[in-house]
Image (cartoon, rainbow over all chains, first blue to last red; front, side, top):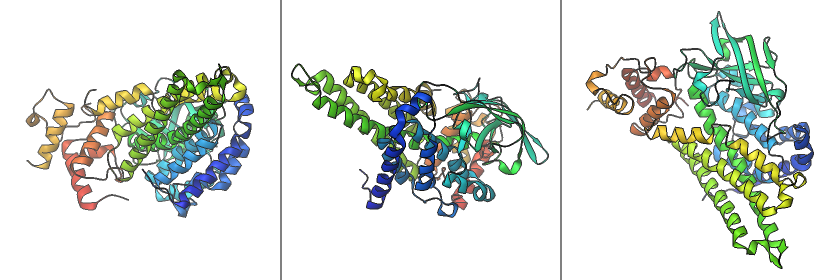
Length: 380
Length: 86
């Protein structure tokens, strides 16, 4: 078990306070699918967006475990599940790859905007015909003089409608080859870049998402992030961070949900006794608790292994699968515990189910995570 | 066994089980010829990290470093000599 310092606990408490403030009007904004601009202003002031990045760029220089612990606090307190998703998307989509793979020039130019939140980040990976199979992507980048010319379209771009900078993954080599993809930093106002309208979706409604269209967008070769052909390796690094940071938020959400469900099961009486005294109810709460504890172990154990520079390719896939499925099971169980109240939108319990389904799809579906683990076992 | 032989044996065992190790030329293009795909590349990098104690998450990786058995051997040599590119 990790022993957190007073400084780490203070940071987490600040994130929780921020999350509570942002989530105040979560039901209204979930109904209209509205991103909280006021919340973004608060998160910018807090310094949270620069947590894991160097102080020379305006970040706080926190390590991975501290960053996770603070985001767990944000998830525990913020009832607007879409907002922390936009926060972690911003941090991992542009900040993490720039910090790890960016040239000195790119870091100096773009990381301060990531840390301050003045330039919202997004990444564009999936395409209409290439979701989990990213190596089949059709968006191309062709070298022309000192620029690459990007042509194609991207789907499901989280933060797409509100982003200022995009990390676009495009094909620079033979289709299907592991060295075929390259990562480019593209600014929103680039000629030929068109951002689609926000798309309606089942959950995470307050985190806007859109398509992205690239019609001969010229990107200076100096804005390649990492080496040409190394896009798959850049994305592998990004996915490790995305899974740890996005899903530790879900851990916080599960902790809050469990606490509220236990409180309700102990106070709600039917047939003269608290509903939690029935094993059919208490078993659900025990399973929710097991989900919390299992998720916590996988998240922080994997993070510690990553920090210790161990290979976590299998661990990260298992972590993603375990936490996202536990979150969905927890959200469904909470609806059952709250009964009719859980089903009504005004109590905010059903919303968690819709949000949790997204977690089993983005960052690699549950099915793809199993396939990845199988591949690492030499089975595919 | 030399390191290049060890890498060859691993690549054959994991990605080309239908051939013998002495049939795989050290300069054969593993990526263009589809021997190692994207997930295979992650497996190979993971194995190299554990076998030779390389901090692969700190090294500036590029697919070219894994194009052939000889390239992989050179990558390991470079990583061991220079240490991580922090």
